[in-house]
Length: 233
Image (cartoon, one colour):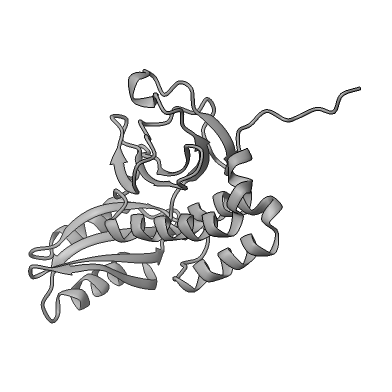
């Protein structure tokens, strides 16, 4: 299976090589490495690896934990092949080519781009913060694997951000800036794997995709979640 492994490590020569060697010895085949952050002598790296389905992830975690200064921030299943920012432009081109289905195209593609489990575009009422239990949101489109019934976190659409709910689900949230519409992307927690929270660079990437899609789709977004208008008999 394809796994995403997020590691925080000392930003000094040789440490990245140690992590890569440990992944290989543990049985992981590295297919992509992305540097998310380099700050204050530390780096945050995402490794996408092919991992033998029958192998125990604990062996991988133990090997990484034995490297001085290395911390594993999360290990979770990735959907599809690794992606780069080149896919963002391709996705926006698809949205522009078929704007009638543009929102659905965006929502369906985002989980694969961000190694997430599901995504929804929801219309959030202005009094969301005064409600309890996530009531009142209208789902405009939901991707494959979205849980039913769906319970959204408090997603008052003011700015792009990440958050984690008490059940351990990580969310990235980005507002469209129109009619209370917001895009919510999630990584679920499982019994065997623990995903990392969305990094600020991932939230920025999601926000940029949403902003560009808003420009492309324009007034179409105001109709999301609105009841259909039936013709008079």
